[in-house]
Length: 223
Ligand code: NAD
Image 1 (cartoon, rainbow, N blue to C red):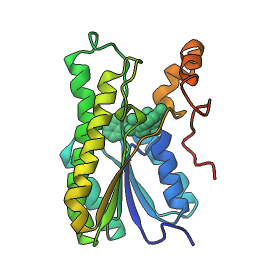
Image 2 (image 1 turned 180 degrees about the vertical axis):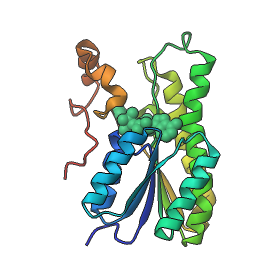
Image 3 (image 1 turned 45 degrees about the vertical axis):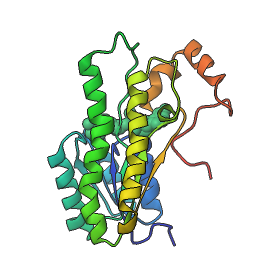
Image 4 (image 1 turned 60 degrees about the vertical axis):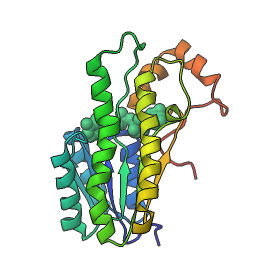
């Protein structure tokens, strides 16, 4: 008996990294999983892997900055599996630059993926969740959304802080619909997103000193 038996989940940025692990774990716990990304080859491979193991899994192209993609993703989820119970707004990007070196284009792009993407996903999911009698929206923010950082990631931190407060408004405004909304704030996790830091020994040693456990996290749960 899985903890998510009978549930239907939609995960953004699910082709690799934490999103791919979320898709695997949700499947393992019995959910039907729809996951979207802009990395179609990797997404299709994961879809084949999950289906090969007997899971109900569908990959679709989902650019989180496009409202039409989100509408199609929710519609596909409901037509394939009957409903939508869980949305994981996981897709995200990171770049490192000082504030002075950050261009307007850099800023607009990271805001579009990390903030507008969460807004559009939430907006698209709410009617389907209301229809299902409620649901759960999980927004992957970051510890960077809670505190400032010395690591040239001011724009990234601003996006993750925005996600935190958008999460709270969503939870308050949709409590009566039975829709929960929570943000998750991981510290560094060993995925492609931070491979530049992980492969830079001196940068990484500096970073490790500030991590209470003295190690990077992994996308897989350790229980
Ligand atoms: P990752 O780079 O491996 O995965 C991010 C995924 O988002 C990729 O599959 C990418 O293709 C997808 N994506 C990017 N732009 C997209 C778009 N426009 N539309 C759809 N998908 C898009 O990194 P990850 O660590 O797995 O990141 C997952 C989430 O966790 C992100 O929101 C990230 O900000 C957050 N996070 C990461 C860390 C870390 O240290 N890795 C720490 C805290 C929070």
